[in-house]
Structures are given as structure tokens and as C-alpha cells.
Length: 118
Image (cartoon, rainbow, N blue to C red; front, side, top):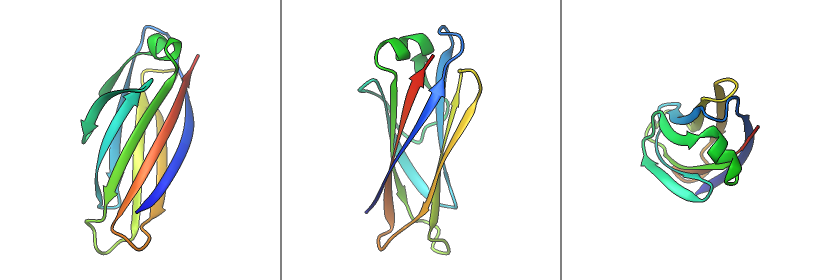
């Protein structure tokens, strides 16, 4: 299984704002994800606007959001896949994209580590 590790940063605005994360799988492929905030698993499955918590609390308690996704090739006509992480609630909505192609297998693992800061 192909493994990809990707890192990004996300800047909060108001520390009282709630941060939310949506994960979308592209190129006709399917997937499932786990999301951890500061080492605590908070959601699994197909994720749409998952509440991560108050921005200030996330920063104070470590400032790390990790999304681990397994992507499965369900579109036989494409070797490509993409995972889009949409974060909202900070200074701006941010779209984080990881795109690649399957190797010899029909699945891939993508780990997106997001450092949340003031």
C-alpha cells in the first residue's frame, strides 16, 4: 500500500471560533478517515464538517490535527486519487490537497498533519 505523509499549517483567528474539517475523496475513488485532535480520536468514517473544537483550546492543548485516510481504487479507469481537507473557522477557509496515483496496489494511505497556530 502506498503511504503518503503530508504536513500543513492553519492559522486561527478568534480563539473562540469552532474549527471544522471536511474530507473529500476525488478522482472517482472512495475512502474512509480517522481524525485526531491533540492525540484524541474524535471522528471516523466519511467526514463532513466534523467539529474539531474551539480554536483556542486546540492551540493551547498541542495544536495538532491528524487526518489518516485510506483511499480505495473504485474507478478502474483512473490510477489517480486525491484527498481534499477543507478547514474552516480560522482566519480563512483553507483547502489542503494531496494528490498522487496508486502504485501496484488498489489502496493508499494518506496522513495529513495540520499544525494549528495563532
